Length: 403
Image (tube, rainbow, N blue to C red):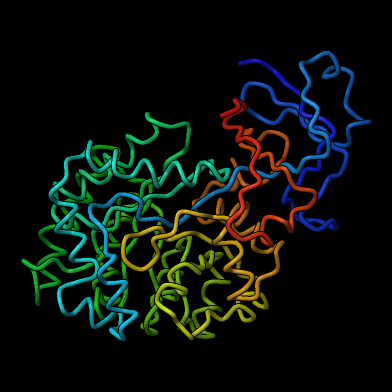
């Protein structure tokens, strides 16, 4: 792999410090063997790098490659009709209880092969890559049989062979109760969730374990059974928590040392305190908030005051967040949730990396980290939050290679 120096750029390193965005103006960055070998002021470039091939950036902005830390990118069909029903007044819960929602996507996902699922997901992945994505988390949870959950994870893993991107897979069989197990959630956990998790681990298909802790899904007690098995396999924990009600899921997940708790509109002070204690990241999903026309905001100030890291993600899924733009996610987070542009950009770089347990590898521009970068035709970082429907990406660099 060839060495290279990027010079005369403005680098939003996203390293915490005195400068907003960790901004390094008139900077240079040296790449060697796919990693950042040096970063600093261009006029301080060490002699050893001065004869390397150089690209002059003409003042362009460089950020870490973006990270989407919560998606459901693999699925069959769509739920445009449910979008219409919600606009006519039906609630998410009413649609789910009537056989729509997640269960309707399950029917369509089961119909498709592994290859079909991967190919169907590619246009969604490509839309994210076109905005500077370097790493994406993809969940299962629309198969809800042993074989179909494994099929989803296999499809997600295969995307790394089709595009230059890092895929992190999350096992989410505890997402919904399938029709054939209606009224028998515990049996579903015994007969599908736990055996499928064991197989996913044995086939090296899973990086983390998630669940949907809600009245329309699984109780905290049922989720604990899944998490106990995850712990036995030494897998990290994530949780869909406090989206529609407060069941104490975030606090419970924090008790397991969860990487993240996600959604969190109904999170209370006790949950915030437990997340702060455990270092659990709050992943906010403004796309779902927007599509569902929610009015209950996540407790942003309480999370800030407690020092809880705040990440953002698209929550790309067919029903409640058919969103394939991290840039729009950032704008939504600022406009709807009142995050600052700096908090929002950190939410799709540094904090999103932390939500995946990858903070030592990606998410900031620091010596030794992977050279996963995004180069933007922008004068300042706030432009990435400010514009709506405009993509200023010049190029993506993945592992030191332009994409």
